[in-house]
Length: 228
Image 1 (spheres, rainbow, N blue to C red):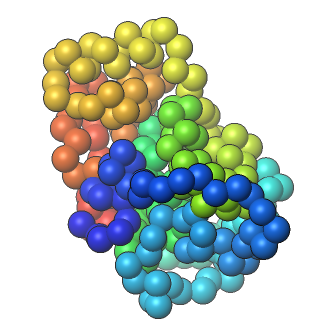
Image 2 (image 1 turned 120 degrees about the horizontal axis):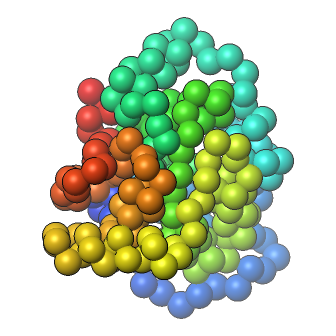
């Protein structure tokens, strides 16, 4: 468990209380937004690595999700994609909120684990879904800090990436979530994310929450499994 980051991948325990800040002049520009105002606090701020292939993420997001990074991955990354397919199946794969946070904000420990997922999506090798709840959860911290740039990047990746579908929380999904809540101890946000994966017939649900239990019909894959 990393202090000051999303605790065990649980978005409900990640947000620091505080009054909302208005987007004012002086909002951090794109190059400074990662790890800046509105991002999820980084306990290893000094260890962040600058990567030429990752840093343009802000510009790429505004231009339509991950489409700007469809170049052929290096050999090591291609091997990671093969291993990813073995672990997750052919998809579609459901992604929890923390997966997006770790990718967009370049988590010092989990970035190398989640990046192959987004490379696979960008290359068309993997289809992924997440529920519209993810959009709500990732936007709270940036909005609270007035970091509109970071909020826009999150929204662009979630809504404008080919191969990534946001599932609306309509009545059938809500019904599935209620059934999951009735049969297990999963919290409502987790039940909604899992129900979205079940509704889209996903092969796996990728999460940073080590406490999330397995559910019938959907394999729960924790980031620790992908990092091995």
